[in-house]
Image (cartoon, rainbow, N blue to C red):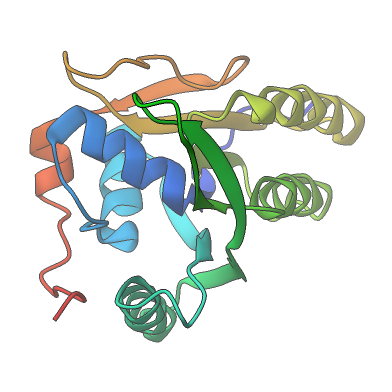
Length: 205
């Protein structure tokens, strides 16, 4: 097996909605105010890795769901101009019924993100087969990716090369979930690191 490379080419796979919810819980932010290129670059610099590509995945609200549709449309367009590879799918909606205190039932639409996790998993595995990275940095806490980590290790053994998979996530004492993805190296993003990587543009305006 080839030894550990001196320069570790890293691809960041960013689960946009998972990152947003983790930052909201850890730091109290109410909208996706991160600059993914800066954040991935900061994480890699701390680890001594060379960031070669950032890939961003998210569901976006339907056009009738303004202003959130417009916010994400503008943010994703800015990411593409920065060279981020963006994969997005329209969020689907389904009705959920709740029982009110007076006994009546009411339904309301909830957003459902479909296919994002599958796309991330396919890309992580596909790029490993193509030897496109030495480190897969998944910015998510979704435990569904633990099986991807197992597969990456199989690929590394088959190719007889050093390969690593890590998960990075916002973390603070207020976070309910303080675990990374099983079978990956965990990288906790503290508030000072996150705040250095805020996007100066406010796409809500």
